[in-house]
Length: 229
Image (cartoon, rainbow, N blue to C red):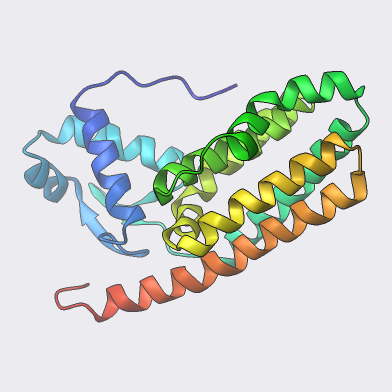
């Protein structure tokens, strides 16, 4: 079941602010902080802070360290690489199912993706492309017609977002994403199952390698900055 939509309010703003701090490495993996510190910085009481932190804990970004104390979840490359590997399994199966659909039905399912990734002018904003990239992969899995696969994939995507968006901080990776998505779509529409799976696997594997390299560099830079913990 998809996570319930949270009402907009102070807790939501705190949630987004702390999550952004984690995404930009202002809060580093393993960093410890208190509810009081967040409350003071956000000019809020501890009640909405605690609510926001529990949302982040549920999503796997932070964990309770001690009474009123929290810790950014320590970085585990093996964990994230396992998530990437699981993504490949799910998406290869989705591609296989799409390739076995009647061509007209498959084309209808993929029409919106073709319109964006092949027909429309390309975006040059990396963060915007990052959001669209998530949509591309999620829509591929959803189009395969298995709601449980789609649900698991959405959860997987959320867990990976903390590092996956780094792939789009490089212009060459933005261009490569457009090219590779177009090739995946074309292979599926031509019902070339093995070719589509090969391109998809290479696409995700290259992203994983780039993200690992950028993440290591960002972590090193952040640790060397004055005032870093």
